[in-house]
Length: 167
Image 1 (spheres, helix red, strand yellow):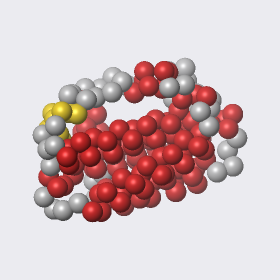
Image 2: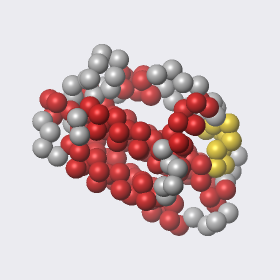
Image 3: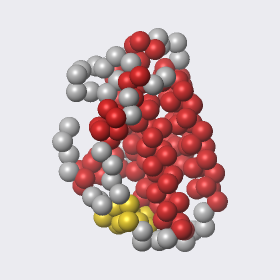
Image 4: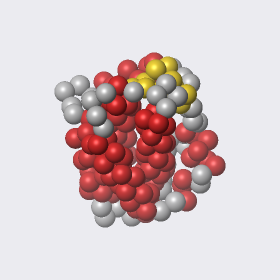
């Protein structure tokens, strides 16, 4: 799906209507674990189409994206207004050999980094939630906005995995 950065933002934030971002983020690791429980690794590594990611690739993407999100928030907290660089997620899938990674280890990595990021977020002051960085494609993004985006990103990939696994 070729979307503009603005279309992507609108779509991902659309998942968040009536939802609390921190609640979504806290629940995602357990939901992912339930979805893949008992599913053979070979099935998790199978792409639904040549140009679509496998469940294993999605899980590794979530782990890497969580590292990126946590790093961005920490950069912003340390230097409000700092530049935030976009990354080419498809090239990361290829160059990082996501298809060969153990999907359960990727989920555990995601869970651990998510937990660390939630601890950070719970410690923020009201004013810190308004601190922002300048995303290279999407412009000004506050920590509050980034957290909403990551929660919507979670929902997007949960639905994608449900579709792939037929759940």
